[in-house]
Image (cartoon, rainbow, N blue to C red; front, side, top):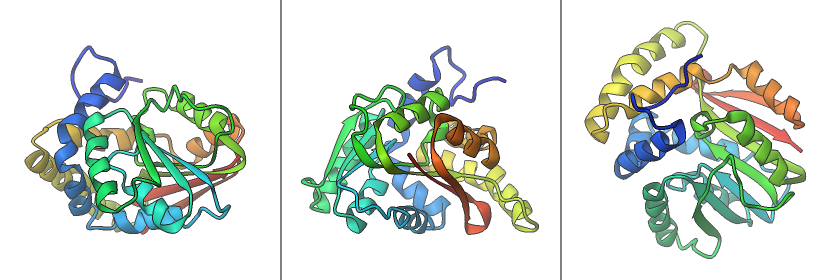
Amino acid sequence: MKETVPYNSSENKKNQIIKMFDNIASTYDILNHILSLRMDFVWRKTAIRRITNHPKKILDIATGTGDLAICAAKYTKAQITGIDISENMLAIGRIKIDKEKLTKRITFNIGDAEKLTFKNNSFNVITAGFGVRNFENIDQGLLEMYRVLDKNGILIILEPSQPSNFPIKQIYSIYFSYILPLLGRIISKDKNAYTYFIKSVSSFPSQKEFLDKLKTIGFKNCKHTSLTFGVVSLYSATK
């Protein structure tokens, strides 16, 4: 199957993803809030509420502008490390944590989810909000998460998904296929970014397939929860 990428380019997916997020960084947050009808705040809070092991250290993968890391800081006492491959996204995140007075709790660094630089069993919790589908190699990224997660540690992943029940499926399909890419194109000025978003959601493994990936790697207690009528999928697991 042909790889889903943002641009018709000879560059590998990872470099195209870096370029895309660097391009849309300045409008990323406002578009998230508009396109999700501000439900993104609820989804992040719901995800962080699944953290029940009182972690000392959290790794937020594909942290972007840091919203999930900031949410984790509000509901836990952990030290949080956020990594992302886009420097422009991280630059905005650093401004946000400074404004929130969280610079002593949250650290942002350039980092590749498929080549984590941390030692084995380094974190009590790993979170990833809307970023796994952008990995060049999803299996390798999940293997790295498993490696750096401590024994009995918790994995939390949020990903957009497509509703399956009538009439939400039909309504969302119209919004997803026509309104979302149009707004994304107008506001972000990147005509490819939100077309890629749609393709990346459609090509992401099904809920069962993704749970099977987690189980194959070695994760336990793998669960899926549909949020907002199936618009978002919340995956959780333990090591």
